[in-house]
Length: 201
Image (cartoon, rainbow, N blue to C red; front, side):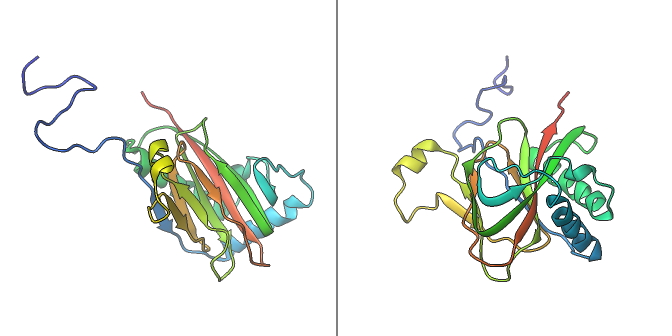
């Protein structure tokens, strides 16, 4: 092997810093419309008839993970935005096959989600349909380096909070630990969470 080539797992530069394992976060604000409100109402209507899934959440309801298969204009648009986000986070090519699942989460007053990560997908994220005008129920993203969490002072930036608002879409690697801070408003906090599996050649 010549000095100008490198095999996988070796440094490609000499005498210069190289960044390893960055965490890419995708954020986009999408337009809301009557279609968005129709989707939110569909979620609330189906919630009355469907059993609630409550794993990891308190004072919140999770739907089944079939929301992105609903035949609604807002779902068609959202599916395209999720695809754009997944390709941006993973650097996958535009023709890469993706498998996407999504479920609605409806937080009531005091509702929150415990710290967790997703082990069975490549990209995870959330799209907000309805939130309070005041800051409430922030998405919390945690520094993924365990040693950093153990040694950081209270002034260090080991936690990033994202305040939700209608139309906001956030996506990130599924291994990134995240949580939802308590929703302190009386108005509901309604979102669609999603997972994306990327099929690599």
